[in-house]
Image (cartoon, rainbow, N blue to C red; front, side, top):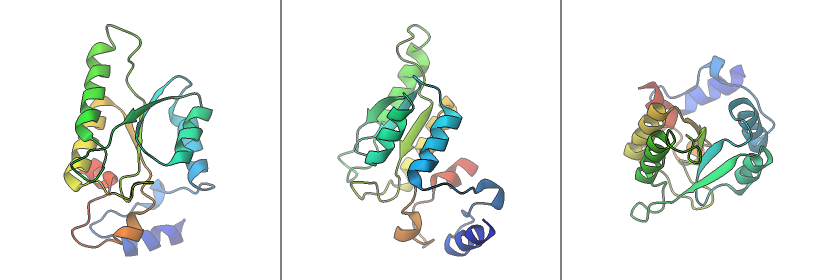
Length: 169
């Protein structure tokens, strides 16, 4: 893992590289999502997902008996996740779930923020900051499948900051 950490440090700018204690190996994307689902959810929990999204993620979450809640893409931003729709969903879960058990707070929010699979769009930095703020306030864990970050930007100046950078701010 030291070699991976050194590689990421050399290729990510702005102090966004992960520290050695935040890295661990998985048997690929699906294996990592399976680990996340096992560690952070229970059957019946809700998972927010951008729609469309990485098709194998759907199956991993369904295999763990999680309720998938699709979230629309914004038409005005070339199809990135509609963060204001996230705000509405979280508000309804927070304020309406006390009255009814059929609208519990989601446990996770899954997205591909850079080079969304399958659409190829990238979430703007301001939306990333707002999304992190919303989820932190609601206690929802963001699962950012940011596999394309290095391929698209490689630490270039002006690139959107990773969601983890907003969480650390």
